[in-house]
Image (cartoon, rainbow, N blue to C red):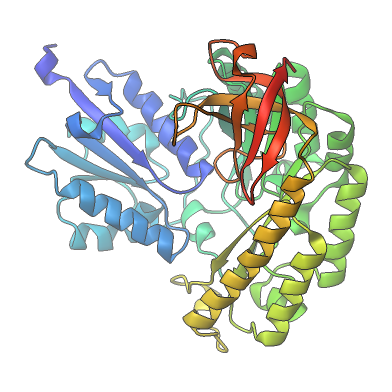
Length: 452
């Protein structure tokens, strides 16, 4: 095979960590083919894959903008443009009609077809019409796209929760768990690739194993991973309030390798809005839940996400949400404005606040959280934490960056290191003990004091 015949393939993966795992599975398929060379330089790529996200309007728009930006290179060195991911599962026909520059589609149930899409043997490996995914990928090789400081282990696929605002089940399908045996095998493979931190992810991670007839499935999985692997940190994302298992937090409270962190997207706290969302819980139950979490795991870092502007959210309901955030004192919090997703129940609901009102409420909520996060970070100054140092800071070569246990990769703030760098090994990522010396609303600054 001549060098000219080898296709240089670049990939852009958008959206959540679960989508990133799909991208890494596709890269694993491509890496096994001698006619393909994976490149990080999109400018030299003959073929570019855009792995799309279809979660909310902003994510869909980002996916479309990225596809159009890549499409501009057609005929200027780019031979093929391939689109994969959630948007293909739901909007393939629309994309094909509006962006004819797309050469091939790869759906969520056809990841193993990516090589044929790249070589031109296949142009359409996706459902003909809107269809939920049904596959569950196990025991396929992955190429890590973001280094080996951390990697995601997708424990289940799909979601069976009835949230009225969410279109994910329309794309990802019903909830289905992988077996513990397959997850341990993949975790051990990630360990051989030098991964330092293992992050368990799914649409509904705390429901893991329920469909397999397991009680306390996620707790059993974490216990098995602790026994069968040597990861210094094991973290899970994300908790669902209707499937919490307190045995998980009891394990977290006594096992230092199972990091004291929980991301539980509550979405709202007003009883009336939760009912419209078809979400479990109530303001009282959520307060009791947060209190018990912190009792079981005293050093817990707690993150959540809320939606502003959902149908039925008036000034009273938003006031309940604001008061709850002020009471809960989350370490980290995200908020996004409601967007009516196609073919969801919430799309047809009345009493929708204006976009301007929803944006104003979101800004007010985030302003409050910024003060809370700054205060909680300030309380860390002078304390020493285990941290993972990942590499040179993006903004300046004079700083290193990393994370303490209470910071999840990619979604939380960073640890910036400006002193004690000579105590670190030359090869990063590496674990270290770090004293916090300064604090900002999202990032913290620290000095390395030694090995963990």
